[in-house]
Length: 127
Image 1: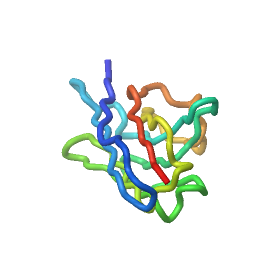
Image 2 (image 1 turned 60 degrees about the horizontal axis):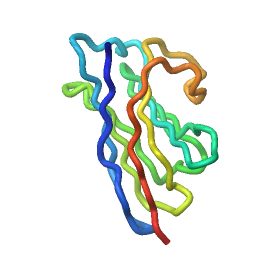
Image 3 (image 1 turned 90 degrees about the vertical axis):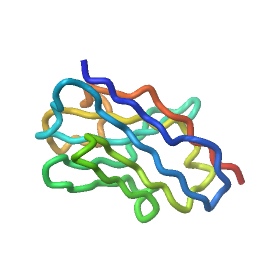
Image 4 (image 1 turned 180 degrees about the vertical axis):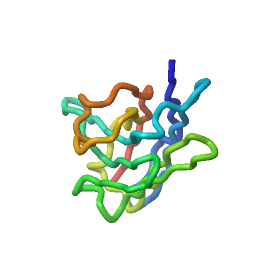
């Protein structure tokens, strides 16, 4: 189908940085008119929107808790989306999931709107 492969998670101290990446592998890239996004989920919590980026225009969107600290970007040549996470806090600890969809709309923060998901990568921030 359209696998999304995530990497870059790990253990970091508070105030540190990590960079996550998500590569869309397949014969075609079906997200050119849509967007890719990052969500996260902590144990016992619901999945939470983190950031999204439209593929064509590169418009980015962030949740309030990460705004100013995280940056989402795309690499058109590699069909890859990245999440640069700076000034990490213990409350950022979660499994981070890459998501994608083929059509853009205003519901970019609703995980139910996304068809394709990566396997998740663990981010742990120690105090």
